[in-house]
Length: 99
Image 1: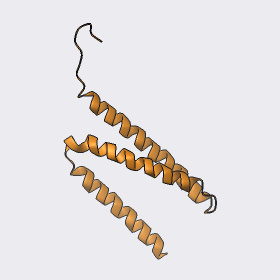
Image 2 (image 1 turned 135 degrees about the horizontal axis):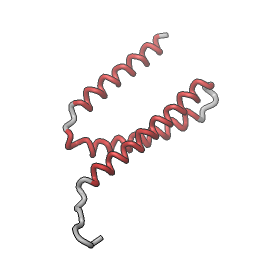
Image 3 (image 1 turned 180 degrees about the vertical axis):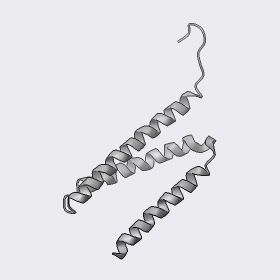
Image 4 (image 1 turned 90 degrees about the vertical axis):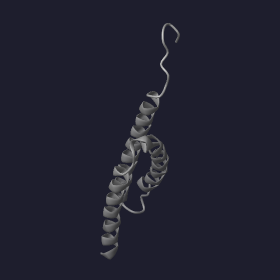
C-alpha cells in the first residue's frame, strides 16, 4: 500500500514540477527544448516498448505499456512538427522565378 502512495506522490510531484518548469520558459527557448524533449521521448518509447512486451507482469502492464507507446509517439511526432514549423519561419523566402 505504501509503494502505491509513493508512486502517486511522485506522479503528482512530476505533474506540478513539469507545469511550473514549462510555464517559466521564455518563448525563445521553446524550440531548443522541444528538440531535447523529442530525444527524451525517443528513449521513453523504447522503455514503453519493453513494458508493452512484458507478459510476465500481466495484462495491466501490457495495456499501460501500449498506452505509453501511443502517447510517447504522439509526443515525438508533435514535437517534430512544431520544431519543423518553427524552423520554417526562419528560412529565407526566394523572390521572383528562382526556385
